[in-house]
Image: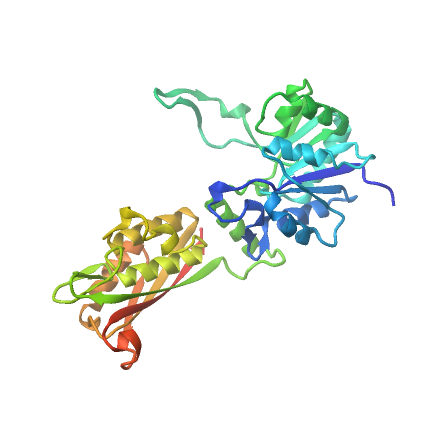
Length: 387
């Protein structure tokens, strides 16, 4: 079998801070499989098989090795910048490689056909080739102080995607003489005096940068029959909160005030129902929990209303690309009595969430903290749908 003449460097070394996840972006999952895995699916589908080099963060090398286990891919550690990471990938090129493609792992759904078109054009033209799609929105050049300066003609503009392809020798030389950091590989190539052509891109080659992008990718995978996809683009969450009663405080519960009832202990107003709902919603959206979002060590949240937490949580969830379908709340307590005010509670909570909320109540038959009348426990579940 002859050595490959095409190499694809898959850059997966970014931190992905804008995605708001604990792990680097390439190792966040889309319906059960990481962004890197889904990106590599299409790279490995290119014919004939190219040399594949994955550039991963130092702290995720083991994970990258597991993902590429059983393949011919090479995994190397990324650098402090994207250009440094690409440079480390270039250092691993096989001797027979004459065409190099650089691809962002974050463009996880880029089809193999786009890789093939870039390869064909580089080899036909002997120049840099990038895919791009037309800009559909109005574009204006602005100044933060003076506002809009001018409207730009979008007819001559394209949103540039990856993979970006280049003749090896010229691209390696361009990297070696680059004197500044550029926004993409084509800019490095052009700065060295080499021409770059553009071909039609693909809507599926969008970059997963924000939570909304991730939700969009999940929805596409879930509804496209992709192996490993889900049956529906919905997610469930569960939240639990328990607070002890405190006779020195007023009772705010389910977002409303309860006169003549002992309050709930806590850093905030102790509204266990709102807190449990927040945990359920954040859990379903993969956005952490109440403790990580509204921590007790933050003085801003001292005595804060549970309704405020719930309003902020709804904004986080919808900002991440989800629609709330419903929330169910189950109260476990001897007091207060939910039945007489159930309709009021459901109305208030439904208005706060923007989706149907049902409230139920039970006791624990004299068992535990709630059974002894020492506190309130709340269990909440929710259902979200990807936008």
